[in-house]
Image 1: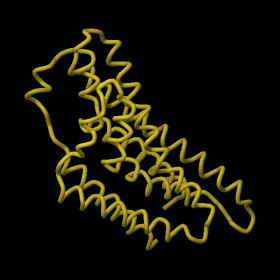
Image 2: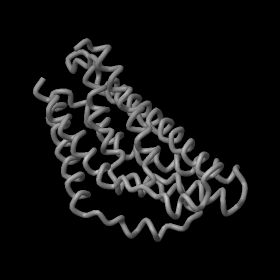
Image 3: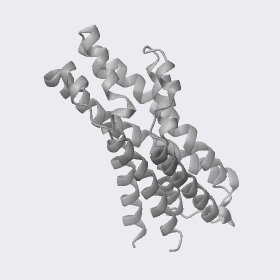
Length: 220
């Protein structure tokens, strides 16, 4: 496949994963609706979405930056991707078996939405889902260890990590925000109490699928 086509496809994967995370209620958009309904101000929803987005962005960065630091070891990129894929699949299998939500999330005060969002994304493996895509983007860029300085490589990898995290978070915020606004404007509290939809199993399976696809690409 043409490298430019591959890179474009990977960036679209970053966007689509953000949309997927935004649609998932487990990433927090119902909390934004609740904030607006309780305070009876649409601006409260915007503030809540901003806090949720910040926490999600920090969680993405916390996962991606360690891998960006490792990738200066160009000769070990395949091994790093293999380890990340196995870790992603393992987390997906664990979430399939253990379907209960982490109890510590319920102990975070409602006004600390950024902290809640950070912990929720970490607990659900949201950032880890991006690692294979991020590694794929890095592999499409010419990083010849014989000609590139270590700090140049690390700086470039960190820059890509920032771009991936920001792009993903913006897509998540847009999709989650649209759903939150629609529920707040037209459906209201009754929908939140009776119209809840659960994506936990689908989420866990998607982690396994992404990890498996990442392993499959290693043979090429």
